[in-house]
Figure: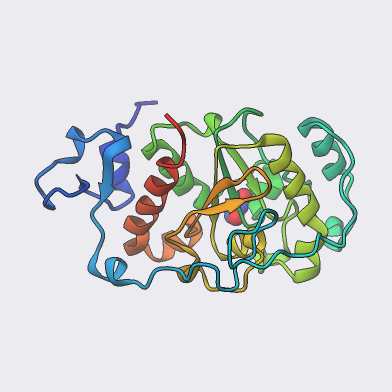
Length: 264
Ligand code: URA
């Protein structure tokens, strides 16, 4: 397959140009700018969008930031096993909620154990349920482009979901399903210890941050996740972007914010 360069990928994402911080828009063509210094050219609406409220209803999972309320640990029993592979096996046997009955298979997630980046989506769709891998359907195509725009391949990042089983008809996960599955994702994060977490979409963001704020309010800031204060960034879900391509520039801004959290 022909390797696409980042400009081509960004073009496919609907982003044709970005500029150095403090530079005039249009003066620095994309090809001259290293990723570490890149800034998206945002449309007016996204520049004017109110920043997410610091604190507010956002609750850190552990080590809450000042003004942030700690939350009680999940009521569901913690998975006990200690490696990602044993956790995968435990997930494959899970019957903790009704989704187990309808699934073809669980979708645990994939990527290297030492991945710097962890992307957390919502739940498997039809293709993911069939293939047992995350983000392999239509939204997955755009997701893969997003990764490539970061000069990464899918194989270099870890991809997981809030739910490990497909909700029928791709409906939103129910609260009891999220609660039953949460310990698996928390354990996954604990074992992976990525350098940055990107929550893709409202369901993932609200679950990880234990917030009921809308996605637009959760975007645009860096959260410190868990006892090791892993930076967490919220962005739109690729499936949403397929419906609202105009918001791709906002996603690119979020990805650059996430990129900046990784120590050089
Ligand atoms: N949407 C998600 O949130 N996750 C997947 O794995 C596929 C589609």
